[in-house]
Length: 113
Length: 115
Image 1 (cartoon, each protein chain N blue to C red):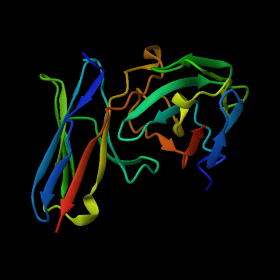
Image 2 (image 1 turned 90 degrees about the vertical axis):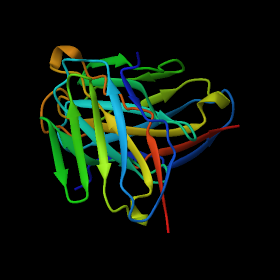
Image 3 (image 1 turned 135 degrees about the horizontal axis):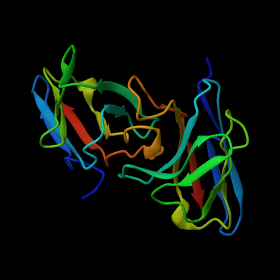
Image 4 (image 1 turned 120 degrees about the vertical axis):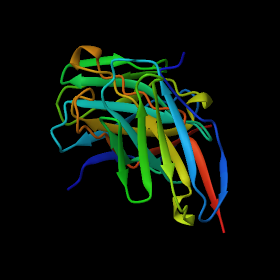
């Protein structure tokens, strides 16, 4: 099983739609989870962090399911500006786990008028 | 605030040439990373460092070397460039990634073409 695996995409949705992506992880000891956004192969930037069951920021909701080892990102009322690639990151827990910050392969979202 | 600075932004290399991609950060982060991103693909970890003097291989280290003599700098060396190394390279830094409230900050990337 890959350390971090995302829905392959691409997701093509109309403006105003609700869309959700999933990300599964293999390290059951991981405690922190992140969603990054990447525009047109520019540098990734942090979108949301998840430390407990979930996190909400406006139209974006990230949820964590520890039992099934996945996190999800829900985008409500999609905007054209949400078109981007969304990257999942699940760092290993603790200093002894080393620094292998592995990204998922990304899920591409395209929001159409 | 400069954050993570990468140089150069663009470079064309001939097969067999060598070069060093520079990366420096001013946030006193102990962790630093090098990734490559091929067209349509995700980020692949090349090498990472958990502090000055300590480096380790990531997912795709072959054909690259790194060093970390200071906290701020983490250069990536390409020896004998090959067309397969054509990619966009990102440097990033963070505090210990297993801790909470840790965000990785990225440089703007180096677009490398090997011909």
